[in-house]
Length: 173
Image 1 (cartoon, rainbow, N blue to C red):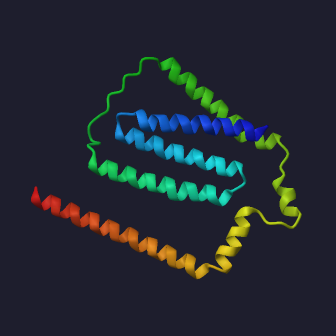
Image 2: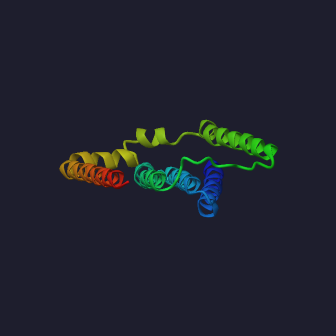
Image 3: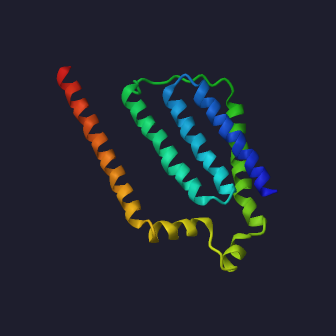
């Protein structure tokens, strides 16, 4: 029962956030909604007991959206104020309270539902994250570390290239 409720909640949130991302006229609102939608997509993986893929979803895809967010802040004029016309404050308060109650129900449901993960681990089998961790850090540790160094090098190179471009843009002005 808990999984069904959480599935529908995550589905509604993902669809809502992606609709905001598509229909919003403000680029920063769109990117914020896109990042929020990516985080809620990770909720589906957590419901399927694929914790590692859920964390990868948050770190990799939401991280890439946040990089897009940073580039959007650099390229768009974010210094000007956005005037928002709120026609109904009662609607906003009602939605805020309803979402707070919904979050409490989703987070409180595992306490009520019987916890099966402890019996799964007590039976001698490892969870998904433990199995991936053992394989990753025992058999593929060197490859994992090399990939991390390559990503770090690419990130530093990207920062250096952007800073050089920004310095040449300042000199031409």
